[in-house]
Image 1: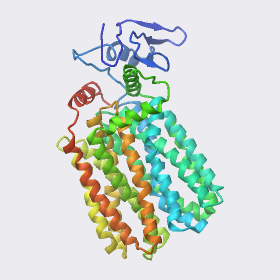
Image 2: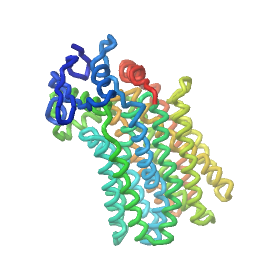
Image 3: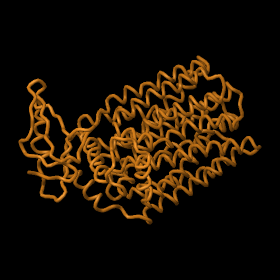
Length: 503
């Protein structure tokens, strides 16, 4: 009899075999592991050698540790790479909807002839809800699965952009584009971040870098496509076609079947819920909020969240008004779109390089997380002085593209050091909630400054100040809280040894 923490007691040959499907089902004796109201069971196809190996050794063997984990044979290999490709595709759409918001902003200004601040509200609500609603996304993916969250995301994207095509005024656009499509982004973005963490452990930083680099690829490709569609088909055709493009999230979500680590983590989470005498199958707002407050009480998570708030306030302000600023400096809209495309290409390179550097043992992830914020902050201070020239805009675009997305690559890896894998989804959800608040406030602040007679220069100086503060506050996470050594040793080191499998 083998006993593992978070897993039931299992007898070596205790299984049932179905003659019809040739499936085996492990019998559990631990009532704490409930899956949708019944005893947890894992099904495997006995026709395959891989499944028999997982049954006979991975779940049943312990190396003598007091707290052993099962061997997950789908981590860092096999179907994980298919899931990564789907995640890359989803992030392409996320990058387009978030960081090409400046193009949508110009389209809304042209269609509705509204003030800059009111049009900024539509874009700010859209990009901010993607992050603010992260806790809702976390609940959906924990209650159901990452796949359900991503597919639902695609449906909401489709409805949001389709509704915007028929919106009669900017107020309706705030609801359809801002809220409905924004909630679609929230479900998909958080779920994809967590999904990559569930399918990769040893190669997590590299995989995360590849996945989130899709955002840069989306900016590069779709920003030009969005401008072309608007030129050819007008605002109505633009939002109609975009609804079909963003519906592809449904396709990408369908490949994200729950991994063995996701199933296992969900089982442990339910075990903890039952141990705390709570009903894990009932949506209890108080218990759900309490769980988030517990994660937020971790000082490191709190400082990372405050840093993310300042970082997103600055960067969403920049991306929302950057195209308009370039046009105001005497360049054409196509040149502004080209700068966004270049930023997207460089974001792909920057994120992949960040993931690669973070995998080097001698590199500290916390320093790699904060340093780009300082560099981008100083470059944003200089930008208004060089923005009148093509070379100046090009230089700033290079730094913006290379440095913008580095923090997102390391969010999961930095967070898991302080929370463990079980609370990773909640930690990411909390940080993205604060990120959403920053994304909501930043573009509106710039709009108010400009409508009040101020200059874009002042808006960018504001952004630079918050970027520098973001680097300082995020860096303090290392000093206010030490990594949970027990969680790191058990959740990471053991998985490292047990999941070191070839591609």
